[in-house]
Every structure is written in structure tokens, then in C-alpha cells.
Length: 151
Image 1: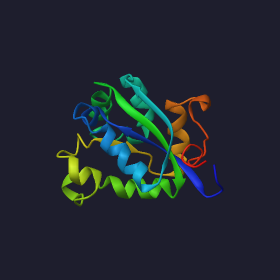
Image 2: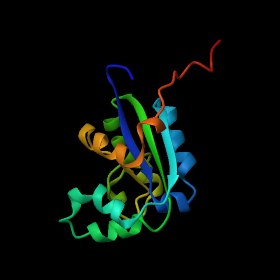
Image 3: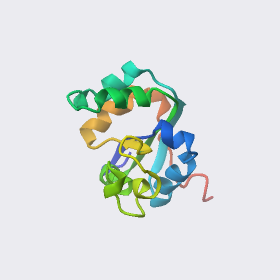
Image 4: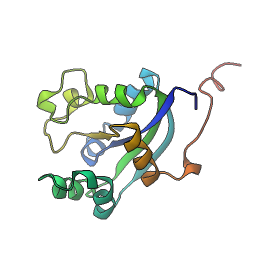
């Protein structure tokens, strides 16, 4: 990973998986120039999400969020690139899709604040905490983006 590169966790939530948006969402991030270095399709327990979202435990939506997230599989990916966290958060749009601009993922695909199709780490510290909750080090790959494109 380059000196200025960082990694983040992005999850397509159960509603995004159910609505067949996984490919479109990942395509947007790859076309932006971010490198996919880890990917999983997995259903986690409610307890897993209680740990992942424990910083939100005082919020009224916490229990419902953890329950919803455990209702079906998600697609978790690790993306790498310069400014990846800030840029992906911008590409996502606001948590409330009513406040998201057209052209953002939530602005284009979400209709409800509680079903807003994806999650992404909001800081480098959060990414460093969340990535190991989903991936072992052996499941994240360092690879050259041009190795198979150019001879």
C-alpha cells in the first residue's frame, strides 16, 4: 500500500443485496479508481452488529439497526486508495436519502433512512477497527492494478 493510500470497509446492506445493487455499487467505486483488496458475502449475527455499531448504542435506532443488519447477507469489501474514506463517504450521500443529492448512491437508490443500502467506515480509526471484524489479514490482498492489464 502506498504511503498516501488508506483502506476502508464498505458493506452493501441486506436491502442493497436484496435489490441486486451490489455490482452497481462496487462498479462505481472501481470506476472512481479505488482498488478492491478484499470481498465477502456473509450473514452475521445480531451480536456481531451490536459490537460493530456499539458507538451508536445510545441512539434510538441502534436495536433496530442491529436487528435489520442480521436479517440477511451483506457484501463486505475493503477498498484501497488515496483519500478513499472521504471520497467514498461523499459518493454515498447522506444517511437520510431525502438529504442526498442525485448522483450519490443513496440519492439514486435509497428511499428510507433505515434502509439506505450501504455502510462505510467514517474515519481511518473506524476503518482500522471495522476491517478486522470482517477480514483476517490473509483475506486482504496486495496486488498491482496493472500487472494483468499491461505486458
